[in-house]
Image (cartoon, rainbow, N blue to C red; front, side, top):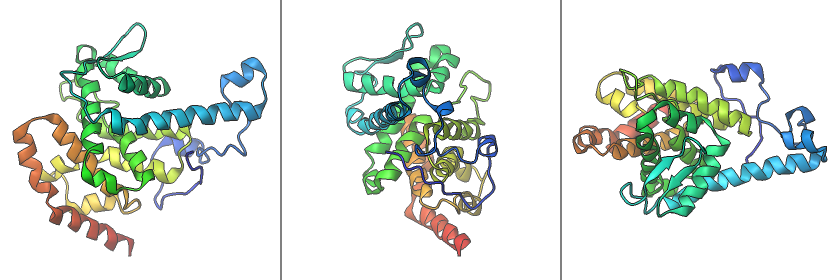
Length: 280
């Protein structure tokens, strides 16, 4: 079950969600009936049962994210055709019913993912496939296995949401989507019940998932990246894996080669040292 401990990051809040309700990391011990699922209001069942229903629903969603580790191992866009039926809102995956089941659980809980597909119209399959291929690259990376269970959970979620607001139909291909997606993930998982510490980490990971390209193109510096993660140092380990997975999922050999130098251990180690210095 998700921890509901309310831990504040050591910087000022960055999103209106925090200003409106600083106690959004809901604790089931103090939740009022106003925040209960409609099941309670419609059927007049006990608040205790309604809260259990909500908790079980959340557990099922987390399990669906966790199941991606296994169901994505053999994912192949040419064998597992993925699509979203606009009329029923259901995800279809050929030759992989387990993946289909888990994606529908996730998409039903977070309709923003469906909206991303709808906005991109004919590119819908491309968007879904990219999210899945990025997540596959992430969870099959040997370094992913070294993460703690809680960091693995954040990594999977960030991977599935890193392009949740991308608009590839725009002239600039939605270049500012990392910052928009970062706000989206805070809004969605704030309602879900994640604590502020995790939300802040997820925000920084998604917001900065283009750091490799920006560093390569001299659009940012190692000092700036370190500053972004000084209040969530463990999140930088996830950031490294997500960015690498995102680039590999792009499938462009030249693109991968151009940025491979950024992943030299010396680069990430130097940034980690800078993060540590900022904390001292």
